Amino acid sequence: MSAGGAAAGIRREARRATLRALGSSLATFGLTLAAVLVLWQGLLWATGVSPYVGKGPLDVWTFLVTAPEAAENRALLMGQLVTTLQDAAIGFVAGLVVALLVAIGFQLSRGLEHALMPLAMLLRSVPLVAMAPVIILLFGRSAATVAVIGGIVVLFPALVNIVFGLRQVSPQMSDVIHVYGGSAWTALRKVALPSALPSLLAAVRISVPGAITGALLAEWLAVGGGIGGAVGAYSSQAQFSALWSAVVLVTAAALVIYNLVAVVESVVLARMGMADRA
Image 1 (cartoon, helix red, strand yellow):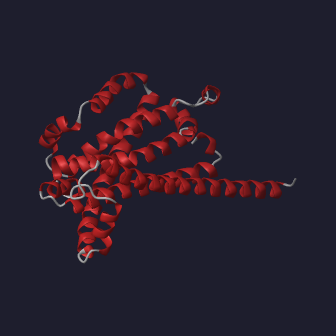
Image 2: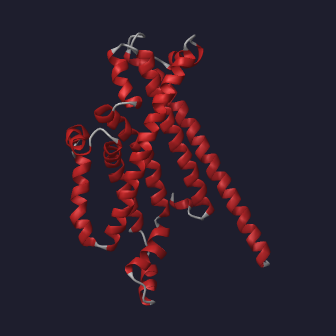
Image 3: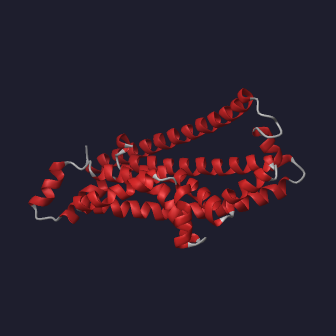
C-alpha cells in the first residue's frame, strides 16, 4: 500500500472512531436524562410528598413554559443561573489550575508531595461549612471567596486524577529521555504530560459538577446571588415551584456541560488513538 493510501486509511479510521465516540456520548446523555426524570417522578410517588411541596416534571414545565407568568419566571431564574455558572467558572479555573501545578510539582519532587499532600487531604476532609467563616474573614464576600470555595471542591479529585495520569508513564520511555541527557522537566514535557492526557481530560470532566457545587456553596454561605443564594429565600417564602425549577435548571446545566465535556473528551481521545484509555 502506498503512503498516500495508508494516510487516507488512517484518516478514515480516525473519522469512524470520532463518530463512534460522539454517538456513544450522545446516547449516554439521553439515557442519563431519561433516568433522572424517571427517578425524580418515581421518588415523589414513592415518598408520598405533598404536591404542595414536592413538584414533578410537569409542575416545573408549567412554571417555566405554560403559566401566564412563565416568561418572567424564566427571566428571573435564567439570570440567577448565569450568575451561578459564572461563579462556577471561577472555581473551576482556580481549582483545576492549582491541581495541575501541584501535580506537576509532585512529579518533579517527591519531597513536595510529602509536604503538600496532607494539606490537600485536610482541605478534602474538613467540611466547607466549617471553613467558610475563616475563608470569608480572609477574603471577604468577593470573587476571591468564590474562587477559594469552588477551588477547594474541585482541587482534590482533579489532583488525584492528574497525579495518577502522570504516574502511568512507561519507565522505558523515561529511560530514553534520561539516556539522551534529558532532565526531569524534559521527561515531564515530552512523555508524562502527553501520556496523562486521558487523565487530564477526565479531571476536567469530573470538575464540572464539582465547580457548580462549589459555586452553589459559595453563594449560599458567603456571597449570595445566583441559584445558591436564591434557594433559601424560595424555601422560606414557600415558593416551591420556583425552588424546584431553580434546582432543575442548575442540575440540567450541570448535566449538559458535563456531557459536552465528555463528548469533547471522547472525540479528542479518539482522534489521538487513546480511546481505549478513556
